[in-house]
Image (cartoon, rainbow, N blue to C red; front, side):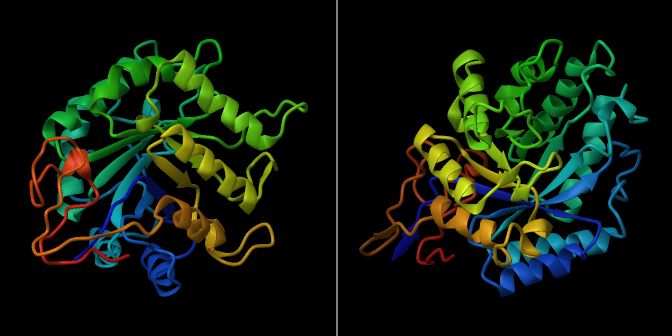
Length: 328
């Protein structure tokens, strides 16, 4: 039997505007760009989940089309998350800002109904415009959702350079880190010191969080943007590959890219999906372990259980099936 171990994770985003998300994922699959274990995150829902019968904020998508998106990703061996927030939908502007428990309950119901494996809270509210209780309110939402759904993969995504005076990100992270599967600092749209390269600035930022905030590398998924970011800083394909190797060396949980739609069109003179495929080749290298009769695989979370132990949250995305080889 051949068993594939995933040492890191790779996440990419598909937007609900522009290309139809289901068509985008099918194209990704057809071109071999969706590897086993890749997480595809659908962006963006708003925080106005005043009902559990629809997803607010998604452009031109019904519940049925969202379910189709999830099943298409799952059918190719991927994982699917729903991203809530982004620059367009601030949490502080939600009608349900003062009802984090109600909001968490409705989000959980929708995620379950659609079959999502995870949720991404992309919180980009300007620190200069949020209420004084913003970090505790956002944390209440995240922590309540965890209590409702212990097996859900929960990521927190925030802008990079979060160490500036007055920012709430460190407080929010401290209040939620035990209930987060990962934190994704978006290492793009950075202010770049002219004495340092774009990649050096990214590395400095991540190193700062680990050394000064004490964030474990195993909690960090490095956020990258293929090609030029919104401030015209260009991340070349080689830069992205080098940063992925840097992330592996630091023991980071993984790498994410914003977004698949950009990469699919070809960016910075590269072929379609060049970043997606290149980074996955480093994140998911072939590591075949040949077993004799029976599976004999132990869960990597340290619980000591063998294949089928069911500890989805600790060992997601691999859930080895005895007698059934895992394929990319």
